[in-house]
Amino acid sequence: MSRAFEGLQCWLMTSRRHLARASLAILLLTSTFSAVHAAKAVEQLAGRWSGWGTVNMTNGTKEQVKCVATFFIENNATSIRQNLRCASAAYKIDVRSNLNMNGKAISGTWEERNHNNAGTVSGRLAGSTFRLAISGSVLNAQMTLNAGRCKMNMNITPVDFNVQRIAIGLRKC
Image 1 (cartoon, rainbow, N blue to C red):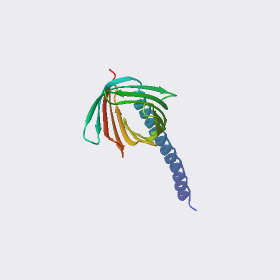
Image 2 (image 1 turned 90 degrees about the horizontal axis):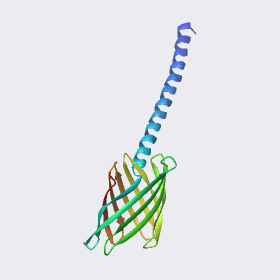
Image 3 (image 1 turned 45 degrees about the horizontal axis):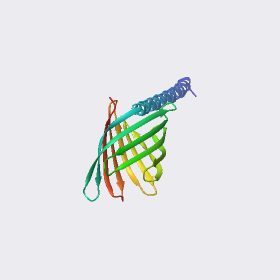
């Protein structure tokens, strides 16, 4: 084997190690950035939010509701406790949720105290939008929650239920 070939082999092995290290560094930076971004989105939820929403029934009627949501962020933004209360003259909900964040994956449980219903939550965080699947013995729904520093929008779309859609706009600033 020639010295030039041995030198080339050595250079290639060294380059591969550097490339592997660089790839690992990029992967670590990307996952760190992703975790920081997810933590920021979760931390923005903290506090008491209030506002109005509309409950659209499947029979075509609409009910305006006053809502208050309180979010407690714990364990370095990996745990979220949420209380959501909405009420009008004819409609009332009181939901408590406990959610866990694992990177951008979300899992947890919920309980609606007025109608004695409970279940699980699963989903993902995409940017600042929480995309959730709500499952229970009586209620199954899709939910999106998008929050900025001062404004939050929740949209809940139940499946096979007498409510067609719940849209809530909340503020905390």
